[in-house]
Length: 530
Image 1 (cartoon, rainbow, N blue to C red):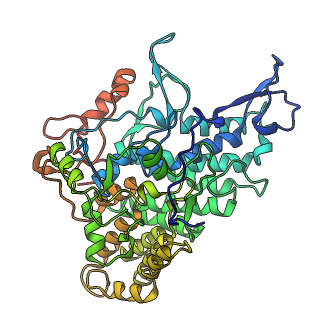
Image 2: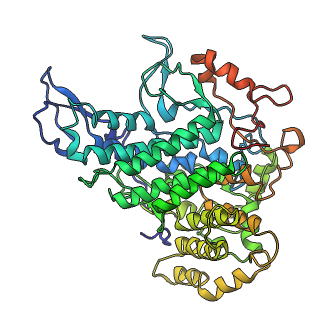
Image 3: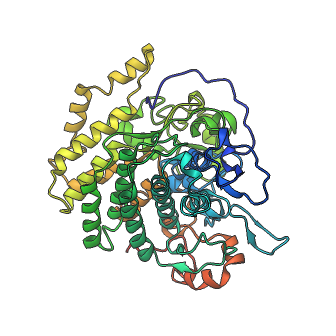
């Protein structure tokens, strides 16, 4: 699947409100098939059977929100990955700059597993919606004797459970990497949001277990239906799970390298992603997030940061060409006050929009996990002495694979010209650059720098890398309001948590106290050991 093609902006597509994926149908236990997402059987003795294939499509269609948050459509999650992308300076805000100047962020996490909190008829009751509840519904339907025989129409019970467990682990890992300690065990038990918090260390231990068990659970039966990400391919799902496992293991490089090394070895032995895993959008309700952001919502609050565009330009990195990482090389200065940001935008109308900006195709694919990311992760692990692999070779392969992901594939002259700049001659010259080659300087720092460049546009991964390695050497912008212009290291807990789960959140918040500020955004979480 081509990640990038130079295409004219397509005609705006009308959005249907709501997703078919949340449909539930009633079916008797003798029913063998639900046709076209089902017809309603009004038998009062029937068991309610979820259309698990449609639930998979709904969850997978929102996966980009774990990387690029502001593109979420109406009635689907907005997961604040854009904030992480600002903190690691992939992006800059163009007018409303509160996040960029580090005003404390306390976003609610309701969209992950509790979409709404409402007062009537039951005070503080959570509706059981959101990505995690959808995945829990899939697991329950494939486990419950009353429904498991019916939902095999959407894949074997074991395979559906395995994929749902992998996705749950991935989503929970993103939440804990944003906040630190959080409700985890028993979170999806229908408890109106009142759940004890779990230590991040314990969450990570369970995430590793879940990913290991999920990979082992695939049974060779029918592939899952509704998979718009990996088309139900079991081998690819195993590699995706192992890759997330490996990335999580690297997060322990500061706090517990012994465990990190052991977990990375397990993931590596199981096989990591060796091809780019991209989301292909079929249209309908499912659009490329960049297209959705610029062409449907018509928002222009985010640009590519000057931090990124300047680095790409200074190193003749072809990902800095127009419509690859950004629409232009005119990066937007990071951390400006509102008036200064508006002035810059007005005086530089060609500032860098994300990827192809308004020219992005509605069905263009979006990177979820790149082969280059995993090769560079292996290079880092090898450089740390966690494996016996060759870090120099993996580093070179990782950069080449990252370039391949973004090489334009269009047949038009402009795409062909851009693609030529990703050629072997350019690659050889790039690898010989003193700032790039591992033959001089600190190899680990250079590997991590390339990881930061390559994780783009996934802001959560970029921010996590910076927090655990200090690479790149980022500094706050001129209007930063934090002491010493310090970059935030976590999100504060959201107001809904304090209103619905106050007895549990209050004591946890105090452990994140900095300069008298409880629940501080400048506090270090467990794996981000000072």
